[in-house]
Each structure stands twice: as C-alpha cells, then as structure tokens.
Amino acid sequence: MKKIGYTTGVFDLFHIGHLNILKRARLECDYLIVGITTDELAMSIKGEKPFIPFEERMEIVESIKFVDEVVPQTSYNKIEAWNKLKFDRMFVGDDWKGTKEWIQIEKDFGKYNVEIIYFSYTTHTSSTILRDVLKKVRKNNE
Image (cartoon, rainbow, N blue to C red):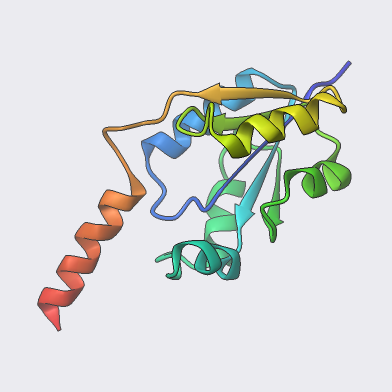
C-alpha cells in the first residue's frame, strides 16, 4: 500500500536544511506532498512577509525531485490538511517534539493512524539567520 507523506514550511531563502528535510521525508514515504505557507499566513504568525514571494517558493519546491506534489498551506490546522490530502505520515522538525501543541496533534492524528515523524533541526543553516543578515544589509544600504 502506497504511503503518502506530508510536510509544510515557508521555505523562504531555500537552503540545505530545507533540502535535507525533503530528501529525508521522501525516503519515509512513496508520495510526498509539501504544503507551502502562503505570504498571508506567514505574515499572520511572523509579522513579516517572506523575502521570496509565494508563487516563486511554490515553483522552487515543485522543481525538487523528491517532491511529488505542492499545495498552498493557508491554515495551520493539520486536521484540515489531512481531510483534504489523506496522508499517512507527517514530517516535522524535532524542535516541535514534546511541545503542548504537537502532543495534542499526535493525539488527534492517532485517531486517523497518521504517524508523526520528527527530523533533526538543521542548526548550522537557518532562514532566520539569513533573513537577519539580509535585513542588516538592506538597512545599511538605505
């Protein structure tokens, strides 16, 4: 039986950490769906728009050979995503493991036999660090 995997992210300033997550996720399933966070959703949480526009981030991730399908992520509600996509496994960074939110998500997905698989977070490359450097460069050039 084909295992469908799902992961999400902003995938702004795409880097090796992003690629590694997608590569590892694809090893754990037969078909990988990636939800790309819309600009509006990213702004609602982070308070700022991603550097790379949504359509371009979709195209970048779509072109990666490990990815079978790309969908917009317009909500952080994981059950809502499952209702649309019916995935068997969800991949998430281990920085979320053990948090109140993800303990509840694990319980919720247990009802649907969805396995949550945590991957090690890439600490040496971070979009947040890259974004901070770019902001400083932009500020110095103004």
